[in-house]
Amino acid sequence: GKGIDSVIGQGGVNLSGGQQQRLSLARALLRKPDLLILDDCTSALDGSTEARVLENLRDMAAESNGMSMIVVSQRISTVRGMDEIVVMNNGGVSGAGTHDHLLHDNEQYQAIYESQIGPVRV
Image (cartoon, rainbow, N blue to C red; front, side, top):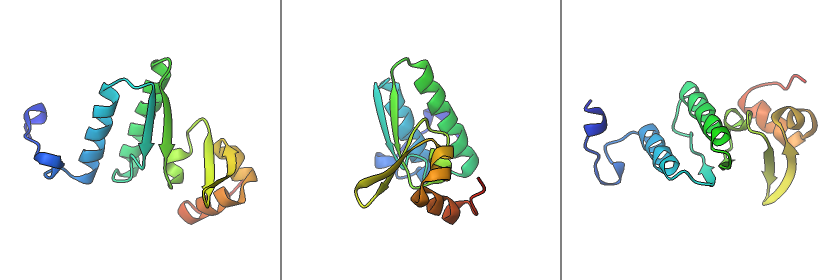
């Protein structure tokens, strides 16, 4: 590939879904926002790439002294390391807390965990 000199088709038509997501993240982060809202930002990434991207995003938020992130996701792997997770059900909040707290105390979170990861062991 040509790296930074690569030609990108209009709308990113010649990029994979994962490449489009990484490019969108990079463009958003270049603006150095105070609030970054990410909706299924890693859905097209494999597990190890998702973990690296999320780790880097958390590091950037911590270093920025003021950037807050809201991450919307249906995947436990995406949210498990977040400071606070809000569990939504039918437009309302059914629980909030850390991954460990919700895994111990929230039936809906437990059900999602079991459907994606396997049996809950607390």
